[in-house]
Amino acid sequence: MGKHGLRWLRVAMACALVLDSCLALEAATDRVPVWGGRYQAGASSGLQRKAQTLCASTSPPGAACGPQILQNEGRRARRSLNDFEIDRFEVSQERYRECVAVGACMPADWPACRYGDGTVPSEADREILEQHDRPAVCVTFEQARSYCLWRLGDLPDEAQWEKAAGGQRLFPWGDKWNPALLNWGDDGKADGFQLSAPVASFPGGASPFGVQNMVGNVWEWAIRLPELDDAAAYGKQVIRGGGFAAPPYAQRIHKRAPYDPARGYPNVGFRCVYP
Image 1: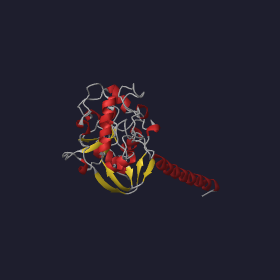
Image 2: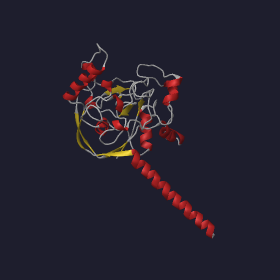
Image 3: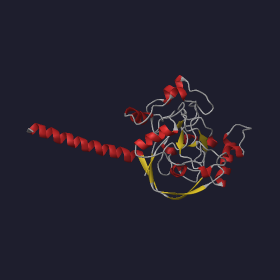
Image 4: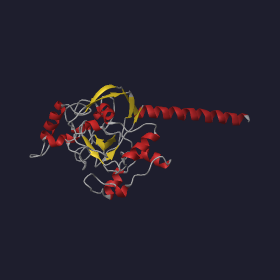
């Protein structure tokens, strides 16, 4: 190899080292550590009362704010958690498409994608939801899990999700409702974003660990803990964290809803955890 060839080899090796360093830095920046230990998942009776008060103060007159808003929140479970890392942001469309491009993930099935009430998103809605910096939605539970496994992680279980979101408080930032700290209201009048917002939005609403959009924006898939169920939910997984169309009382850390894991939804995304 000549003098010039050796020089270019050294340059290429240096560039590769820089690229590896940048990728490692990117991973470190996009993930935040959460310490483990004993954690009691589920809402305390005090938090459940606060949720009903929140519903009464933020809902239209005559709204039903009784025990029905706490469905599937009646039980608690003590868990022992190892230390873990969690994505700072919800997985974006851009990141999910990278997984699809290498054949590790299946593309979202938009023709079959429906809201929980069966409504089909319009073409205009889809154009917003598919923007590269918006959360990846219309992916099933297993599709989301395939992405996390590709990144050498997994979906969070409910205890991991709750702890990363802030634990025993109503919201990641505390117990006081603050509509300026999250994306809610699908028409954009409340927060400036029609439907979903970019995943790096609303840093002021981050959890104590620095995790963003744990409530609002889109619901997120989590691995269901059966011991938290009020009633049997066999065959279901759960979504956590509210979303752009959910009312304030549903934008709480402990709000959980059993959903069909075989379907994708326009307002359900995900993030990953790592050992």
